[in-house]
Image 1 (spheres, one colour):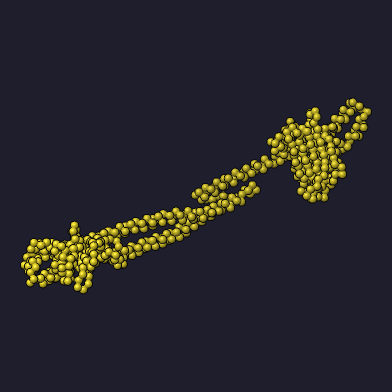
Image 2: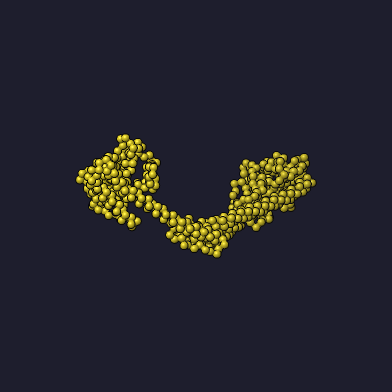
Length: 556
């Protein structure tokens, strides 16, 4: 992910997350407060219903109390209770007359056994046993919701009970007002309603969800075996307004989040562009820097962090310029030193055979002067080849980079020249006859072999039975023919650590050595398109294997 994209994401998250948290908190707090307010309104509505019910109950109780006070003074009622036949009709009608005067919708007078003496709402209930009605009021002070028969159907009334004693008989008077009228007179809030809920009746909740209730005992006298049940005055409400407000808050929160997100992304894009453009320019300038191009200009008049970075890069580029100049000078000196060492090494290798011949001639001159001419003629070839070798080196080094001339080269002949020029009796040969010519430069091949033979001779020098051997052979494999030259010695060999550094410049284990022999050999072998491999083991000697392509073959 790019820096600009990360900046956009970070800026968007930094703006949106607090906004979303704030919106969620506002919505939660509003929901909590609105719910609490709604609950308080519901509780207030329930308390109003309960107060109205208590007021209605007290009103019914007052009317029954007045009736219970008046009946004992009514002589005709007293005579009717004493079974006076002339007053029987009066007893049947007394409840109806009293119900009309008191404004009640239900009125029934019963004896202590629960037998109906007079019924104002249903005259034919006379002499019927309804003991469940007075028992419904036992232990309770509040009203009871009663469903009773009338001449035209069933009546649902909110009833109370009172008692009196007439002519030595204990009587109960039950009266009540119509429940539907009471419910209809109850005050309503804007989104709250009150309904009467009977057992098994769900119609009261059809207008909304029940949010509060005032319980009422319920007795259904229309049943064959009436029993006291539970009904309630249910406060119902519709959460439409609350849900609408919640949806509105959610919609505005989402709209504000979307608008803020767009604004944040736009601002982040502008800000990231302001930051990334100068950084991209710095990156382009920095990418163009290398040791051959240190002319980049990081000058700026900015005073912020990007300006500080520009000044830092400018100072770094200046240090690189100075360091590159010092490095080139050091490389030039090292290259000149390497070239001087290589020239010195090659000249020493060319002078060694001449030194050996001259030493041999000096020994012959002292021991047998007469044989000097014959020995000189015998060793004249070595002197001529060594001088020719040095002359060729001089011409090659005149251009600082020796020019290779790949041509068919007799490897066995070069090996014999190198062996003749070495210390006699130390290096043995094992040459394959009819060896194919290799594609090589004769002078370069001689330099390779002289270095390898010199190392082998040095490793066995001073040993009683040490020897060095140079062998040649031809190989064929994978359609390519090569000429292999192996220089082996029985010297002390090399350890793994020494072998790992054998081709490093100036690494040597010989006193007075330059450490350039194997390094030069490897470069020369690679120039000829060949391969060089060293096989060694401590105490078992060393084998240097050179493989060169046969003339006319494609180098590997």
